[in-house]
Image (cartoon, rainbow over all chains, first blue to last red; front, side):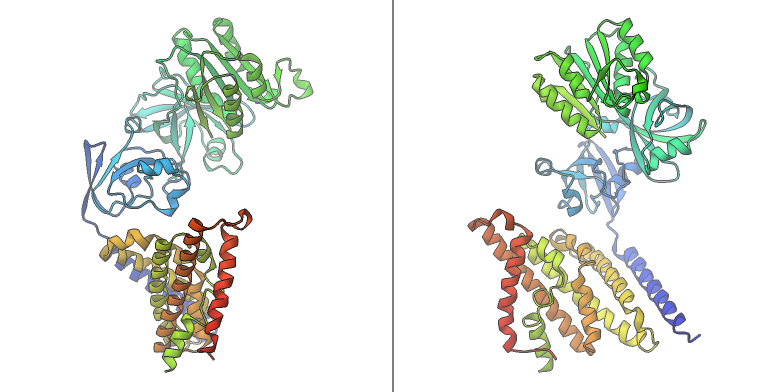
Length: 362
Length: 194
């Protein structure tokens, strides 16, 4: 028993045990805040036992604030406006919240602990978000790294969303969520489609590509996002997308198709090789059906065997070429951040004001 | 007399920030604003004193009699982390206004190396219990003093002087720290430890 290794290990463990017990007892005795109330938008009041974060109370009360990191203050999605009772902004939040937002009381819901009565504002759109139990209806490879996932909603069975919005996919067996734009038309309220690109090492995309199968039961929450088709406008529409940015744009296109394509629409899609293009037939068929619609795919590095005759180079070159200056249009952009930044610049040069450029970076 | 020597020496001549260059991350980063530095300083005084007072009996009454001194690094780190947790709960419960002003620094202190250093010095110098308390209090007051002076100087400098672009931020902090260390060396004639 008196070995020089055994005693230290025993002592180490007993000290750890003692400290853990003390901390647990202390938490029981000390961390108790009594009944607190959370007032949402000055009307709805939640009565809760204090001590946990706002995000967790919202989740427990079926209010779905978007959050991809599960409350670790690493994604910065769960921004809400705290009117009173939130305390001082924490160092963990500072990187996500700009000076202007700070003044209007924007906080990360996952970092605000409820210790007293608290008043918050949540946009109506978020209050419309629900949790859906759903079943995987079909899966299909569109390119070597993009999968189409069709999801049938079971409970509730219908989702109401604006074309361009996204849902959060809960990775089964974890508390992690990942956001995916809906690629189907809002009229298909029971069966929605997502496009998922495989990201090496990505938790959710890895799960969807390698584990998920038809008839699996999953949970999604939504709809979220302020990237959606502005239907009260009569401007022409410029859509620019790359990779999975196809998803929200496709939703917008399918929606407008049902409406008879009332507005002039040009869709620029950027990819590397011909093998990265998908829905090409469907989109060209659409452009033959509606003279108002034009599809312009551009390849940045076409393979010689692609025998590509369309646009080459970055997608911004195609935009530069096809859009006349001073166009009466609004733009919907979805794709990787460098592409969006470049496209916003090109559109700005063409005289499209920034308030008419909507984008979704991922 | 011995205790007074330890106290004075640990604040001035053996200042833990300026002579031993310990606890530099918060010393450089959190010294931008005077009030914040005061908050950080006070939290450090609390945590260091409390953690060292807990570490002394654990080391002398548990580890040594059982011949397990070799794990004292591990034990000290765990005790410090637990102390900070406990302190955070106590402050949240009984002094909510303090929570907003300096409670947010507490988690940062867990990884402040000067907290561990004070416990290690206690072992190295074979202090008794009362000496340990005085030494911990003195060292942490010394560290708080250093960061508060630094913050006051930097705040004044921000308003009144034009710091060369290449030196702004950490650069000028290092230079000020060097000058401060010289100033503290001036106390060296007063008292010395060992």
